[in-house]
Length: 398
Image (tube, rainbow, N blue to C red; front, side):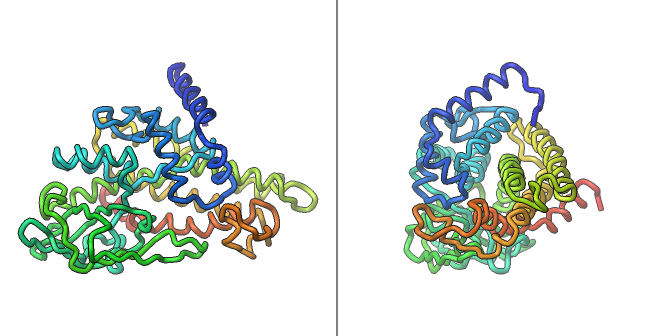
């Protein structure tokens, strides 16, 4: 999408393109382009390449080792990396915990954890959702009871994305049952190697054990790992979620998905002609592209408004809803485009070096996997129904 870049911004875009051309390993870009599963080592390799260039903390100020980029630069970077089929930056440490620590962490926590996020010493996961506390996070039941210089943590987290790889988890825990539910929640950093923690994988419909249950039984956590004040975690959680929901909009991923959809529709036939020439299908593609262009502009405005360091407000809920709906529409159209070849889904075809013979065109399995996996987009980070309630209350005052 042409945003009317200035000459300086065009020069930055060319710099990003040159960097990707010289530094993005073809093995990684081929895996991403082919819809193959990425390993922990793949993500770590790409993170290290970006960090060596000083480009991992894209939303961090320079004082903490970040890029200090403005909204347009971040937009250009996302656009170019997704177009080049680079792996995504795993968000939990960089995009979620990092901003929370900068805003609310102690000097000691910032000095210790922020450099380790950038240099890859710590892989973080998010401990928010529980079986009875998903979109309603105020219902968190995992407890942290103070015992001298420690907290004793008991409970369960679920839908912990990539928790099987994590060294640390940032958790919402209940430290008080007095007053309103939101007033008894704290934000705690927990070493995943601590005795009493058990990780149990949950295999999704696409065959990938991407999310996990994490169980805590008498887990002893130093009180120094409390972020901010005790019982003030709800404030920090909301701050993090506004960043997460803005990121979930996934403009770059939607744009890459749209390009893939057009390629698939151009290669598949309908009544002897490319599917993309079918007026009914082409109209659906055109509509989702129009929606994407509008959403991308809104996303850029929201990020620009937050450039002062303040978390975006209800606008992040708008972006979360619209961005996830658009990505799901693109996935559904791609699955429709591959037709009957989407039905015999063979998960093993997404593994690198598989000996399983493909079924139908090469695009079939990645398109189907994306369709299955991205059904979660409208649920995680706060379901779209909850986001619409936030919008109606905060913006429409209903």
